[in-house]
Length: 233
Image 1 (tube, rainbow, N blue to C red):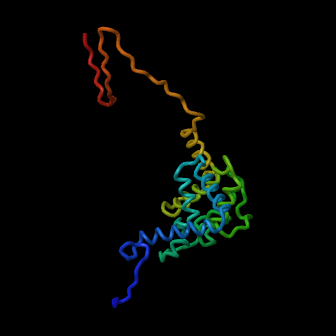
Image 2: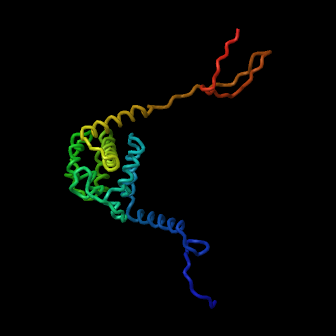
Image 3: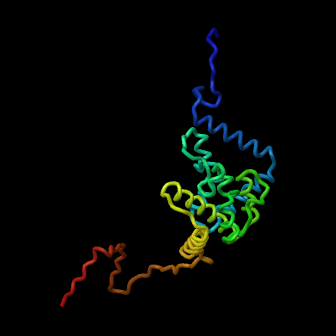
């Protein structure tokens, strides 16, 4: 009674706004909007994300795909938007168009042979999408198995090759890029073969020692670098 009015943040016990509570409310509203938009689209997105994360490619390749979808890759166009001063904003492969994610991974004329003759054998420029995110998810939904793995590897190889040109002054070679993406994928799959079933371990049961004898149960470890062999006569 008689006090001055003041702003109070309803979602905090002390009435003070903080980033944590604001983030929580934002996530809550986002979840409500998704439920209101319909469960079918939610199921579809969940299915596509699961399909992406289950691909048998190196984790860094999947993470690169995630960064591409989320728009966090530091392309030259993205850096300019963040007020970073660059001497050149054109694509390092073709030098004719501004380097954004859509151009670099989908529309660059210099990289079309890499897509057409590589593991995936697609024609990205013919895809009608004007968004790299829409194009990416269309490819994830359309491709499967080795084609999808090759698609993700191709995206990662393009980015690595781009960085080598920017930071190391190297030159790109389409044939080398195709060989590198395929050999790296084969090497990874060879070293991370998925087992077809689980082996059952033989369970050992403790038994009582014979009469007149003792059984001592111990636990130990062995460090090969410190093992010394002593011969006794």
